[in-house]
Image 1 (spheres, rainbow, N blue to C red):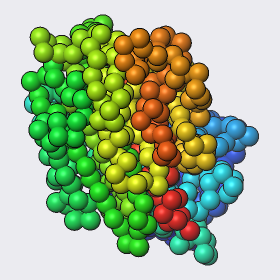
Image 2: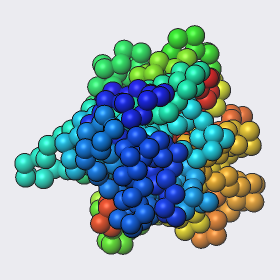
Image 3: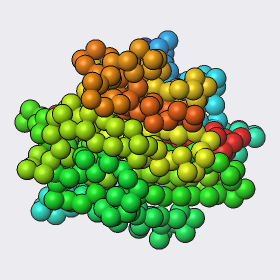
Image 4: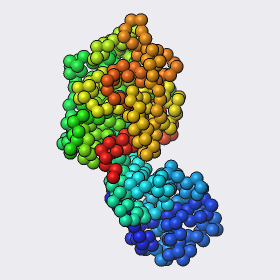
Length: 499
């Protein structure tokens, strides 16, 4: 896919299709008015007679307008003008790309009115265009035996108008937006695979493939013997019930002029979660193949930073295992010793994500990180609290939490700052070990974070509970690619690569 910007001469642009916006009240957006004038008022007549109401996401394809060089014009509804914002802009773009994908149009020029400049500046305008195009054209990597459909015909996208110095910022946004969409595809492709394909060994092989494709990424994989040498007793307790051996994956990227202290990203890599002996209800258990979404997001992030050659030092850590019930599986009441030396009483084997993460977080200490961000589909409690709209952000450093919240707002991939104070850690007290792995029903997402916090003392750390946002069920079942956009924005801003 090729992206570029245009600045003037909308009616004279050579394209298979021009896309302009129309508001619900029949008001043509500015670029639509310009095109309407060149076409002798034909667009205005179509709208005036009620053929196109302009509701959000509606589209209408018009062919061969006199005075317009493009062979087609597509109208897209922008809804109420007074309520028009960046969210609706994204929705209109997505609807347009979906409609274009049902044609064989190869070259499109977007002239969709954007919200105010403060809401969508030139950089983010370009980035949103490329992100939405890439995400909308994503095809799920199904394993159906039927013949695959034709690939998308769309090859070239231009966006505008962007004038003067804004063109440089918009082009940078287009490049980075395309890279974010490509990274999100990495996450979605991995998460959508079934558990019998995407095993811990498969994840490790994909990390090695990334290292081969991107020489700037060094990959090290610890097998079960290597994990034992690191004394990761909590991690091994989770994996011991499965015939699939665990893998601990270390990916390290050093960009040009990168600082010494890295950003460490830690991903939960439970490739399938039955709950173990604390077996889950069977309804929707198939969705537990998505329980490795945090690890997929880490792999996506390493793909992003290496493809953009960001001046960052980033380490990705993935603890990959299956959580299965068997005669060898860990039992409620068992006590295990973590890599940090702290002992954990396992009261619920379905609270396994925090067990693999705690050993990975301890491993991160050796890198003397600038900060650590872990990503995990960790708790149903977070879904109850925030639904599918926000991920949960818990941190021992308010500045880091604010940084992630701001990145989520800019990326339209929002996270919400939740508390992780000492009261929640008190709920984890055990009569038999240093701590228990659960703290009761109340504040379940927060006690899970408090558990992880016991392994991150002295380091700047944030935990992202992505259980509600990483995938969706029902008729549209599949990975969403979140929180890759937020994580990408966080990294891009850390690199100073926006300006």
